[in-house]
Length: 363
Image (cartoon, rainbow, N blue to C red):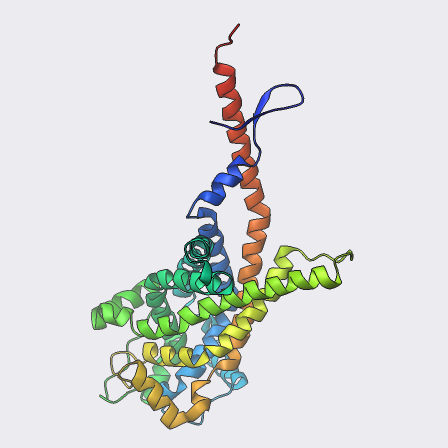
C-alpha cells in the first residue's frame, strides 16, 4: 500500500521520497548506464588527438624496427606535417563507440555491483568494493570495447592514405614473415570487415587478454583512487573548512579528483598498455607470440624504458580524460537525477491521490 500522509489541508498524499527509495532498491540503476555512456564518449572525443600520439609512439618499434624513436613533440610534428589536423582524429569513430559501451557498463555496474559486494561480503567493503565494481563493469564493456580499440589503433597508426602508403614503401613495414602489415582502412565498418576477412574473430579480438590485463586493474584503481580521494576531501572539509563559505560543486570536485585518479592509474598500468598496443597493432604477420613473449622481448630489447614507452602522453591523456568523464557524470547526476526523482515522486503522489479519490465514501 502507498504511504499516505496528511497534508495541511487534510488531503492524503504519498511520501515524497518513495520514488527515490524505490530507485535505491533497484539492482540496475539505468540512469548510471546512460550517464556513463555520455561521459565516456565526451572524454574520448575531447582527448582522442593525445591518444593518437601515444599510440604512434608505442608502435614505432613495430613500424620502423628502430630503437632510436621519436619523442612526444617530435611525434606531434610528424603527424601534423604528414596528415595535418585530420591525422590526429583518425580512428575517432571506433574510439567513441568503444567508450560509449565501456562508460555505460563501467558506471552502471559500479553503482550496482559495489552495493551487492558490500551487502554480501562485508569484508570486501570500502575501497575493495570500489575496485572490484570498477573492474567488473569494465570487463563487461570489453566485449565491445576491444574490437573498437583494435580498429581505432590501426587507423591511428595509418594516418591518411597517402602517408600510410609512403610509410609502407619507404620503411618497408614488414615483420618476421615478410608479409605486408595490412591494407588501408577507409572507415570503421570497412576496417571491421577487412580485419574479419583476413583474420576472423581472432583479429578483431587481438590482444583481448592483454587488454583485460591492462583495463581491469586500471578500471579498479581508477574508481578506488577516486572514491578514496573523495573521502579524503570530505574529511578535509570537516576538519579545516567546515565553517568556511568555501564550496565546490560536485562537477568541479569530479574534475579535480577524477584527473588525479586518472593520472595515478595510468602511470601504474603503462607497461600493460605497451604490451596491449604492440599485440593489437602488429596484424597478421606476428612479431610477438602472445602476452608473455611480448613482455620478455620488450624487456630484453628495450629494457624498463621500453615498458614505460608512451607514459607521458598516456598520463597526459588520462588526467584530462578521467577529469572530464567524472565531471560529466557528476554534472548529469546533480542536474538530472534530482529532477527524475521529483518527477517520479509526483507521479506516485498523483496515482495515490487518484486511487484515494476513487474509493467509495463510508458513512
